[in-house]
Length: 257
Image (cartoon, rainbow, N blue to C red; front, side):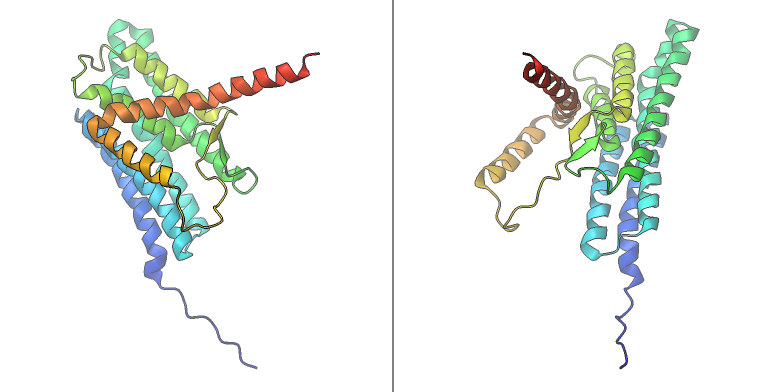
């Protein structure tokens, strides 16, 4: 009995998710160029565009059934540029480089912390790759690199337009703290909600309150996008440590006689 072989999948379908990955890589590369030219708002926006591309490429691969080991590795390398190198260099050019005017040691501290962020992003991505399939998908172990990059770039974007009266020079020590905290949270063991909860029984039904929340979020974003993104980034970054402390206190209360 002859077996009927399935028709070969079109190469254009395999190319589609990698095109989005390449778009994200380009956005991260552009952010570095823009920051070197002093265009910090454009650089921050480019990193957010890379985040959107990163969210699309995986979903496209799953929907079209074109996931591959090559795509996984390519996506990881692109993420290292877009969410590791790009945010570190944007933050350095915008603010951390000005620490050199406070002394040689502080100047070296500025680029050392920027490098630490890039290194922690690489470690976070490597750990994610080896833990795929062995951890609860509802949680990230450590702050995800796109979220860390979003926190960094929202901070830059919120103050780069000078509407609040502060710039990268005045905020150089705050920038140093934000960069260091973002780096350490990425390599921590603190759990963060991944927004990948259990599937609904009826995927075609969405609660009415969810539709209202989407409309409310869009309305808030329109009012002041950079500051809203910064507030969201700070709250998400704090959610992990706060939940960790809460769990520790709850466990100690249970173990107490």
